[in-house]
Length: 141
Image 1 (tube, rainbow, N blue to C red):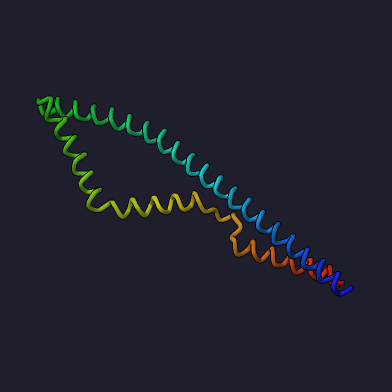
Image 2 (image 1 turned 135 degrees about the horizontal axis):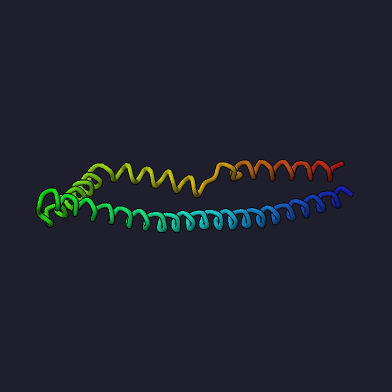
């Protein structure tokens, strides 16, 4: 009788471990899919909005360059001034903005990949242990 209970408990434990392994694998598959889809959506948004922003910036730059050319009575001087401005902005970004850009990208993508509403593996393990203890207690009665 005790041997039957022991084999039944071992079978239950074995079944629970298999279920745990399967559910953990499925959880990480879903989490990977969710993270990759969020990353893909963010990338597409960046490409679409970035493209429109670059077109707007291009036309504004051409307009400012032409206006400066008229004001300075030299058509190429306006373009040189606008080009020099963008060169200075690029130089400042290279010298001072690299860490800031890196930090903002890491924060942005860490928020995309890791949600606060996700169950942490630690909490998931606690839930599994609780379920296992309840199962063992039910079989002992």
